[in-house]
Structure formats: C-alpha cells, structure tokens
Image (cartoon, rainbow over the protein chains, first blue to last red):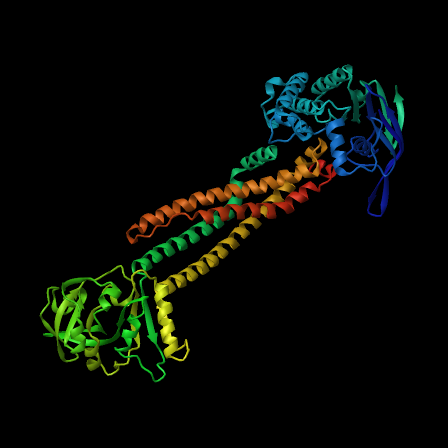
Length: 223
Length: 396
C-alpha cells in the first residue's frame, strides 16, 4: 500500500547539503502496524513529511494506494492528505478556538461532506476514542491524553487509508501513553493501517513490525 | 462559504477588543461619510425649499451696457406685449437718510412701479402700495416696511404720517409685512426698506436716471419663467446688437442650479475626505490581518495538514477581513443614525431635516466591502501561500 523506492531528500543549510533521506526504501502493506524508530536527526521527520504528503521527494518513487505521488500540485496534495491520511502529532495540534467536536468535523468540512452526515461521523469517531461526553469542550479544557484522543478522532473520521502518528505519546506520561497506544492497537485490530514514528523503544515494541532509520536509510528490525 | 463566514465570526469573537479597535477606523470613516453627506443633502433640501418659496415665477434683468440706446419706461410696453411676459417692474435702490421728528435712520429706498408688488409677492399690512398715478406725477409718497416703521416712528400704524427722506417730505401711504423667511436682501430680517415711485427717486438721487438698468420680470399665466426668459432675451439681443454681455438675466432657477452645483461639489469634497479616512481604516485592517496571519501560522499549518487547500485558507482570511469591515460599517451606520437624530433635535427649530441619505448608506456598504476585499487579499494570500511543513512546526 505504501511503497518508497530509492527516495532522496536533501536540504541546503548554508553551503552544506544535508542528505535527510539517502536512497530510503520501504514497503508497508494494508492493515499493518509499523513503528519507525530512530534518533533525532536521523531523517524521521523528513520521512514522515514525505509519507504524509506534506512534502515531496527530490528523487525516487512514492506510491500511496498504487498512486504515484510525485509531481503533484499543492492542491492535489491537500486533497490526498484530506482523504487518504490521518495525522496524529506529538503536540496534538488542535485548533484552540474550536471545540473537540468542531476540530473533528473540520476535515469533513474540507471534504465537502453534508452536515447531517458530518454529525453522524463525528459522533462515531468521538465514541471510538471514548470522548462523547467532552464533545463540546475546548482543547484548553481537556487533559493531554484527552486532547490526543480528539486528535485521533480527527484522524480517523475521514476513514483514511493510513494513520500517520508522529511521536503521539511524546508529550504524555506513561499511563496516558499506554491509553493512547491501546487505542492505536484497537484501531489496527479493526483493520486500519498505522505508521507510528517514535524514538521511544517501549512504544515502538508494541507494533507488529519495527523499522529503523539512521542517516537517512531505512532498515528492518522486527517483522 | 457559509463555513468560512462562521469561522470568521468565531475568530473575530475570540478577540473582541482587538476586533473593535481594528474596526474603529472603519467605524469613524463610515460615520464621517454618512453624516457629512447627509448633512449636506439635508441643508441643500432646506435651502431649495426656501428658494422655491421665493417664487420661481420671477427673474431679474440687469443692463450693464446700453450701447447708447437706454431703456425707458415706454419701452417696457414692448416687453409686456410679449405673450410670455407677465409684469415688468423697473427698480433702483439707494441708501438714504430718513427722519421723523428727532429720530433719523438709514433706509434702503427703492424706486419702482406698482407692478413690483405682485412680481415680488409683497404683503401689505396697512394702507396701499404705489399706484401708476404716483409714478406719472412723481408724487412724494412712500410705502415702508414694519421694521422701518417701528424703528423710525415707534409703531406700525403710521399711514398718513410724513417722514423726510433726504430732506424732502414724504407721505406714508402703506406699511408692508416683514417676511422673515425670505432670502433676498430687501426682506432680510432687520432691514429697513422704503418704496417710492421710480420717478420720485430720480429726484432724490444723483445717480438714478430715467435710464432703466434693472427690472423684475414675471412670467405670464400659463407660461414658465424659462419661456419669459427666452422672450426677454430675444428682445434684448435685438436691441443690443446680439451682444449677450450687455445684459444679465438671473432667475431663481439659476440660483437653484448654482446651489445644486455647490452642494454636489461639497458632497464630492466631503465624501472624498471621508473616503480617505475609510481607506486609512482599511489599511488598519490589513495591518491587523497580517499580524493575525503570523499569529495563526500554526493553525494554518494544521488546517493544511488535514486537507485545506490554498483556496480554502484564502477564503477564510479574506472572509475575516470582509466581515470585520462589514461589522465596522454597520456599527458606523448605526452611530451615524444616532448622531443625525441628535443633530435634527438640536436644530429642529430651523426646519431642516437631517435624515440619513439612503444612497450614501449604500455607497458606504459597497465601499466597505471593497475595502475588505482589497486590504484582505494581501494577508489572506500570504496565509494561503504558507507551506504546511514550515507552518506546522512554527513556534514549537
């Protein structure tokens, strides 16, 4: 379902060229739960940006659902992010002015889903993360774990092909982290494809498959 | 679109004080525009009403160059023979000293003919006006107005008494009502006027001669003042060798159109100044929108990550600028309405109606909308162009 082949991405910092991704290749199938682990500066974020269609590679192929994501325009990338990818970030990235419910609703609005359908799907997504009672709360009125659950609801509400989580437990204590991981495991159980990027071994271990990234290259560790 | 509108209201509502301060420029601009233009149009209407009350049925003809062919009393018969011309009253005035017993004052003394009464729409309080025989015989009689009577004789019931004008004894044959609403100088409040036969004034004054240089002309029944003007112009052109600089004809229509010119000039001028203040208000909005875009870089990144494209972001911020402008505009219109009401109450005695001019309100609304778009476009475009990866990691 996800196929990266010889992907390179370079950054120019001053006169120095950084090879963030150096001929990285990986393949992830539908329904997998994959952790990508690596120290900071290893190219994790770059990989995540490319898989998440937030950025495009300099060279190499990237196929998402057998569609090559190469020379896509910004608008086309936005459409793919909206329909195929659900993001969960380390710092939750909820919009503070909107309630939990409205945050979850947002990607559906961008998709052009009708109001009554939106309401139904938002309700279902919030139920799945067990936050129905907090639907009308603003992010500042929620705990870190609750905020991350709202973010997960927002990621799954569009029924994406891929849930992409970037250090989702990085800002949470260990028991809350486990709650979040349990949700991910549960989602994977239900058939969702999950890619989790982390530097925490304990978190990574819970995935069925672990990929290691170092100096812009990807290698298999477990699976 | 509706979503963008709701979103805009939400973000404006989340920082009310800032939103209000941002709108202040627009509010003041709209108030300036609506109030000033409404005041000008209100004043114009009331002045026009006064001009109308003067009677649009009379015109003034002045001869500046008679080309050795002066107009005499007899020539006026030729004027009245025209079917469009009603009455013709030659007149001449001079300020002269009048005395009654030990009191003396300066009167504006008008030498004229009986027709003057109708042409000018005068009203008698007591006695009678001049008669043709008075003019023919250059009788020493005069008609004075109320103000002159009270000033000189201390009362208005003065018919039959004698006053002396420039040392010559004149019999008062009538007293005229003061008409305070009138605009012409002869009727201005506080002015003291005496009317004497034209022929008598020739004797009183060194400057007034038999040569007529000024007359009031009215239109005949069934004809407009413009018809009469054409007829008189025709006549005078023939007389003065087609030289239209030899005479001037002014009607109240001309007065009205001058008034209109002045008021539209004023409207454009004041409207222009107000428009400048609106533009300044728009720049204020652009400023704050730029700050807002920077502040909300992260929000823009989040929105883009979950699938908002450029157009959606552009729409959102543009909508916010336009909504900000329109709310400011509505507040401005409301306050203008309040201010105009207050002004109307204050000047209610002057019978001037300062109502809100609906056209200027529509113009203000349209202009604010335009300003919102024009000054919102730059910040909104800046937001739309942000790259999701850069903005997502902005500020942590």
